[in-house]
Length: 233
Ligand code: DX5
Ligand code: ZN
Image (cartoon, rainbow, N blue to C red):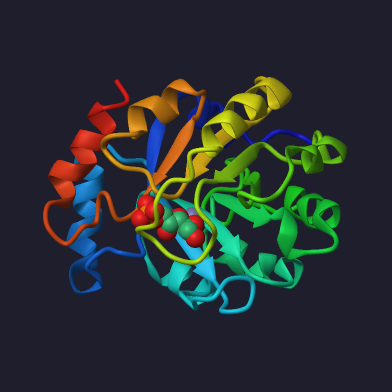
């Protein structure tokens, strides 16, 4: 399967943050997103939860579609039966779609289906195919899927909520993951990222680091986004 051209763009910008929109001030979302753009952020992270795969219910494809932005849409699906919903998220303008290995009996089939889909924003851009692993899932699950993903999202908290504490054993997992995938896949770390740990997470080899409540803390998103980005330089 051909690699998405977007992968090269993301690799060139690595390490970078992807900001979780969940804890933003939705009443002033337009200006919140402009703040992110002015801080040089490229990626907007959508935590899609269905109340089944994980306890909370957040948003579906219409919300992803309705949010018009120049930022790339990084869609993290924490839902059951992802195969039946892929079309809707692609139509909603997803640039990265990440599916949990634990959310379907047929992860190989889901990744293959994703590889045949066209980016709705720009047909030449491609869609980055991501696979996400919960903290309790062995890395060996990736082995038979080689060549079918371009990004691995390592969840550093159990799926469900923003604002949880970073699980320390994730660090070893990220190091091992880098040895396993080498340069064949981007590594994304998601959950519990703060100003204090973002630098060390990047040094483990992460290309994309998701940050939700550490940027949208209800106080100073611009300053937070600049501080998080600055910590990566
Ligand atoms: C957890 C989600 C994370 C989370 C990140 O289920 O996948 O993306 O919202 O939020 P923070 O950065 O607040 O831990
Ligand atoms: Zn996420």
